[in-house]
Each structure stands twice: as C-alpha cells, then as structure tokens.
Image 1 (cartoon, rainbow, N blue to C red):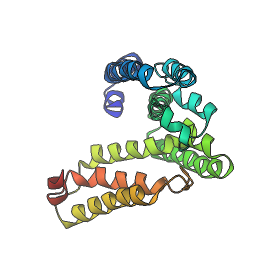
Image 2 (image 1 turned 135 degrees about the vertical axis):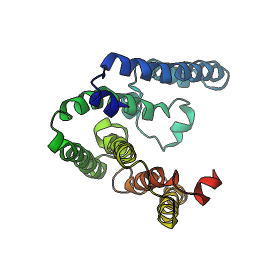
Image 3 (image 1 turned 90 degrees about the horizontal axis):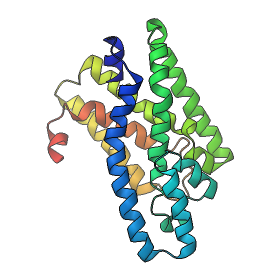
Amino acid sequence: ILIEDIENKRFSIVNFYERRARRILPALYVVTITTAIASTLILYPEQLKSLAKSLISAPIFSANFYFWSERGYFGESSELKPLIHLWSLAVEEQFYIVFPVFLLLISKFKKAFYFLLSLMFLVSIASSYFVTQIHFDTAFYFPVTRAWELLAGSFAALLLQHNKSLSFGIMAEIIASLGLSLVIFSYLNFDSSTPFPGVHAFIPVFGTFLFIIASSSTRYIRGLF
C-alpha cells in the first residue's frame, strides 16, 4: 500500500496512521479492558500494580520498553503478566513510525532503493546477532534488533507486487512446503534456552517469507488451510 501510494503521489502520513489506528486500536481496547476486568478476579495486589503499568504502556505502544525494564519474557513471572504479548505490537508500531518516512525518502533514489532497503535490513540483523550475545532481553524487546523481521515481510510484499506470484507448479509447492517446515521446526525445537532473536530467528522468519511468496500459487499446500 505504501509503495503504491508513493508511486501514485497520493501518500499521506496522516492517512497512513489513521488506517493503522482504525485497524489496531478497537481490538487493543477490547483486549486491555477485558484483561483488566478478569485480572481483578485472579491476580494479587502486587501483580495488579504491574498490570496497571502495562495498561498504561499498551495504548502508547511502549509495552516492549516496559517489559524490557521488568525483564524475563520466558521466565515464570511472564505467566502473571497477561499483557506481555503486546510487546510485539509496540515494536511493530514503533517500526511504522519510522518506516513510512524512510520509504518515502529512499523512493526518490530509484537506483539505490533496494540497496538502501537491504542496508537497513543488514544493519538490523547484524545488531540482532551481536546484541543477543551481549544482552538477550535488549535484543528481544528493542525495535532496532527486530526491524529486520518486519523488513523481511516488506521484501515479500515488494516481490509479490512486482512479480505477482510464482507460477503454479511443483516449484511453488516445494518452496511453500520448505517454508512451512522451517516454521514447524522452530516451533518444535525452540525453547527458553534458545538464544533469540539472533541467528535462530532467521529460521522461522525465512520460513514465513518463503511461505508467503509461494503459498498463493500452490494447490496442495493452500488446500491444507
């Protein structure tokens, strides 16, 4: 959508954020309100204090920084943080604060467009690898170290936009099956001891990328869903 709007000179940052708000906020409010009501019946007072702080961070999309300050997504305490999954929504929205403007700027350099986008991807994935070695929680929660995963989706969207999709045939079935296998492998083999994101995150992300670009052109894989 962003690329089409920019190419057709109808891009508006206000309209973009309005679409994001209409898509995200109604569901977010339902989740946070129902969670707050249920938590008053389940959690202890100290846990409710933590929940209240996460309720504040949720609508301003800073939940990842809040939970980073508390640490331990995979720790036992995470079971008592009913809104901890909102860290990923916060990262996504922080990415979308920067990415549309970045895309608008680099679109003016058509020859260097993919180079600059790839450079952004490489910087992010490199930071993900090195920061994971130094401080797991920072790599897990911070937008810079997770941006490459969202950029992988951007590359898939660009590929499908320009090449539509792979032709029906055995190659599409193989690529989609490989992608699905990588996602399933990650699900079955990754646990709290897996250094993540780092290089391990590349396996499910690459699998998802392959599945996205190929599954719409399959017959058998698409039939499974």
